[in-house]
Image (tube, rainbow, N blue to C red; front, side, top):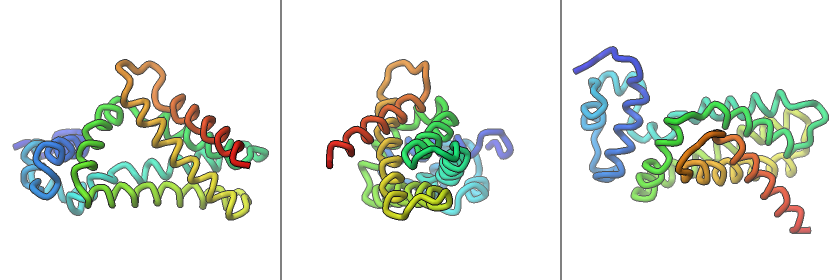
Length: 191
């Protein structure tokens, strides 16, 4: 069994998502995930404390990129424009593996209550990261929260559209930004 091959983390994520979708989250063991990924159980535990953490594997990076984009947005950018800058930064970093993983991950989450709860916590974490970044910019509390929630919805809508495309030339960013523009227009009509 290969122990030090590169890409072990990515292989573990792909193996876990496939197994979760095929046989269910509860029926999948860490040993099965490690075996399918071609690594040892100890390699699994070097990357993840348990199988639940596989679902949120990229959350820290995603939050960091969203916050960096919001922080680096021009000073005169409004809250939604700052969110757009965060979405663009984070979405631009997502590549083919993220797109390939989407449908399989969606199927695995749909089949498990525990994974659905974990996915919901991931959304809460993304919203908190964006809210905190906006608050740091001096955006008032309710506006920061609302803009961050729009950002989470836009990211999810854009990602769903992106993963359903047969061919992808442009990447995730244009889809997330288009979703944010639609949501912004929809929220203006609430008045």
